[in-house]
Amino acid sequence: MQTRKDLYQAHRLMTQRVALALLQGKPGAAESPSAAQASAPSAASWSSSS
Image (cartoon, rainbow, N blue to C red; front, side):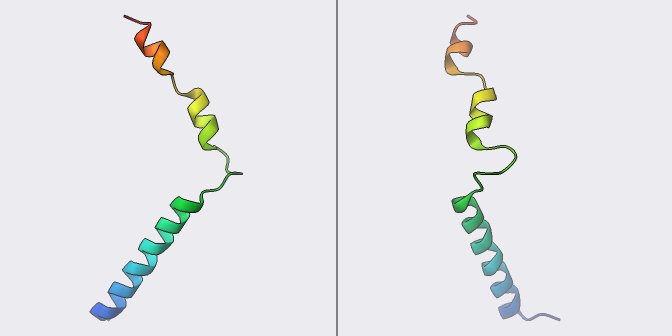
């Protein structure tokens, strides 16, 4: 059985890895942020519907 110290260290490691992955990103990924923004409706299209 793991001790509290082991569980804390595992949690801290995973938190650091998630934060690092979010900060680094992958520009060559299948869906880049610029592609997602291009497919999203713009603010102008929302306001023109009224």
